[in-house]
Amino acid sequence: MFEHGPFSTHNQNFGLYTNDLVYSVNLVLGHRGWFLGLGPTGWQTSCFGIFFLLVFFTGFLSWAYQAACPPAPKKVGPPDGLPITTPRIKLRDGRYLSYKEYGVRVPKESAKYKLIFAHGFDSVKHYAVIATSASPALIEDLGIYIVSFDRPGYGESDPDPKRTLKSLALDTEELADQLELGSKFYVVGFSMGGQVIWSYLKYIPHRYVCVLAF
Image (tube, rainbow, N blue to C red; front, side, top):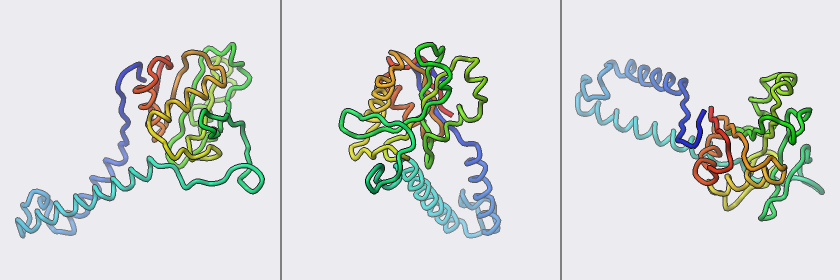
């Protein structure tokens, strides 16, 4: 949990997969020291190791770029677009941002905690794990109001052709204002939703009580 400070996310499984991959390549080459140029062919083995690393990290960067970008734009709403299943707000530039409220039995006006959830890569507002993994009774007992939203270009939210970290922060701030969440609120980001968290830390630090990325 972070309060007006830097944050980071970490995937332990990725490290384990990387170790397994390196070990497997070493077995194929017949020597576990090939990365350091200590294999049977010395310098040539070291060059192959460097080449493999370049290919591997190029692939990783390509994956990371795709994960950070929203899916291809799609038409939402009548007459011939996808159906609208949850409410949407109209943003300052005319785009629509779709959202879903959890813990609606706790009125926003009396909620002890007002929380905005940002979903991860290849996900939508319906998968707010912090809400779906807790029972409605627990959410009500704790007095938590949760709202999740489709990030621009995801689900039923319009894409933003001029999307930046700052625009992500301002879009969510506008959501909070139109829903009358008050001057300060809690923010949770899951997976690539941490990108939204970073935008809050940088551009609207005065609006959140506490942020959490996991």
